[in-house]
Image 1 (cartoon, rainbow, N blue to C red):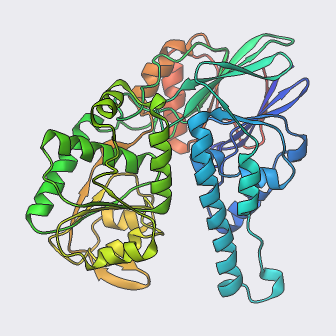
Image 2 (tube, rainbow, N blue to C red):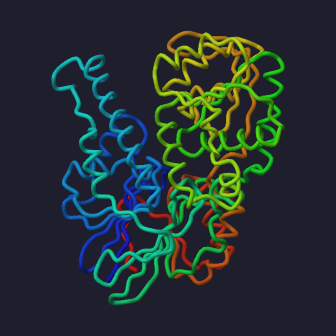
Image 3 (tube, rainbow, N blue to C red):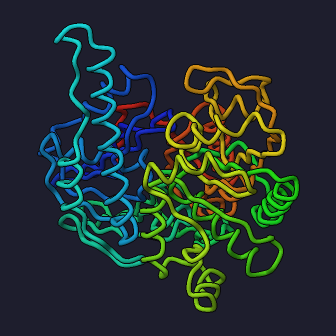
Length: 464
């Protein structure tokens, strides 16, 4: 008998974690960090559906923190089984989990120094750098399209997902009491996204499907148009004597933008100017991207063979040192500054915004979704004033929104990749979404012929 249990990313978009109960143990699909209100997040991330020491192997779809970020917490509480992921995912997790651990330790330190009024209110970090290092030792790299046994009569295969470097859909084959195939999409990517290969459309047929639905209720702009728009905005800003500030996620989005700029420079459509990537994590992530050309699509491989460098390491200034970051504030000539975090809530991007938003010659380019109640959203809304580090600044600079950079599948991508296999499914389970997203994915699968679609609640279990 096999059962699926849904724990994280059930009727929400964060903290991906699902359990596969088989006759010889319980195995884990993803172990992401739940991100939300502090008290809720702390409780959820410290609580697991069963003792971690009793869990079997973990099958990881990709390195994004909402899918991998609580692995050190799992290890901290006794998990010691192998963690299988693609080689690129293993390398990304090496740097991303260490970065996350640093954030956990700094968050606890800040709380204890600034907020805790009594010893009882002091907190321990969710996990530490030592926990992250212990977790990384459990990782076992697997190749795309190769089967990896993880239980008696059960094996898994990692299939290109086209979402971020190393991302995969996971096909689980169980040959026990009742042979079956379970397909877990992880986060499904898009076609025609630069650097990465496209996900296969349609995806392989299966008996059961676990699918994300993050953008199932919308249609993205064409990613092929984004490079031209990006280059045009940069050239116009430089001609006006201004700087371009781009808040971008450290993994995936930053590398995509730099790749586009390198292409444009080689083509002659971008006028040469200094480009700075100001984020230690972005620098480390880019090094991982450079280490894994086997993940590139045909266009990126061709550019790599011709140029020897698709991330501009001889042209782009990659900054890690704090003093070098601060020195950017004194630059007067046109340049491009790419810094995380993507939603402008923390990190070095705040300093660059503070020093540049009141200059009409400058431009802020928003290249990703900005959640409500974030500084990024207030910039998108073009508020007259925005608060940074407790002080109000006039938003006088130019603001441009480029919505075509998303690496998540949209409604059309889901229909192409999942529609042709829907009628063969015994059941589908829709996760990693809320409200209209869940409804939209249910409609996509139902219209394509899937007879049974579940939207599991946290803790709900299904016999397969």
